[in-house]
Amino acid sequence: MKNVVLVNFFLLLSLYAFGQRFLDSASTWYSSSYIDNFVDGDCRLKIDVTKVVGDTMIQNRLCHIIGVFSDGVYIPESEIIVYDSDDKMYFFEDNDWKLIYDFTAKLGDTIQYSISKNFWYYGVFNVPQTYDSLLIVEQSYQLVITHVDTVYSDEGKPLKRYATETLFNLTGHVMDTIIQYVGSKNKLFGSNGYFIPPECLSTFPSLRCYSDSNLTMTFINEECNVLNFTSEITENDITFYPNPGSDAVAFIQPDSMHGNVRFTTYNLQGVKLFYGDVSQTNEIPTAHLNPGIYIFILTDDFGRFWIGKWVKNL
Image (cartoon, rainbow, N blue to C red; front, side, top):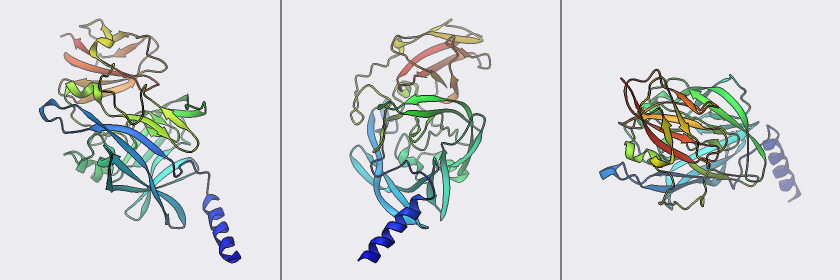
């Protein structure tokens, strides 16, 4: 019996000797996804919970198995084996370890990362879309760290926040803002370049909360696992000027908007055009846009959204 205990002890010791771990059995990501594929203009959302559902040994590494509960129903096909060490997160697929996050990255670094074949279960629909096949074919992506600063967990723990720019890929996949030990605010595996109807842009799915045994990170002003369908986000919440305009657009900052603000620009067909950080003067460059009507979504440090329309002159 003593020999068995000693073997187990040294096995666990060797597993953790490779580097510090941050994922644990309590790691849980709360996010949202669309209930349907916009049938009859249906923009309703449902709650998705990604969590650790088990452990396994792969190549002498103690790994976690994560899976998705969508609207309370578990999807066994969503399971992915993940492993973390030395501030990096990997998943195991095709008999190979593939990097998804590198939390040791510094400003200006270019990171090559991969996306799981099970991506769509973690996306905005939970079911395969037309362009997801391209996402799987491409497999490997690159992003550049454009800004690094600090945010704080609900307990006050400092965490690195990365602003990223994903290099060109066939599906328009982006990670956008990444939080240390949490992942992308566009859900765990980022966001694909979906065509979103304009009426659904204000309910675009995103990460709501993250928690594990050591920290909690909340991006909303409501319960993590409960949707508030009387959303406070409407087009009247934000005012852009000059409107119409030409080379740049600015906005009047609401009192409830705090911290750094990022913008995403869409056309009326719901195609994401470009995104970035808002300047200190609350201006967004628009000289490169063709004349037409555009939709801007603004997001602050707390994950709050504001949406508004803007017209570019001829």
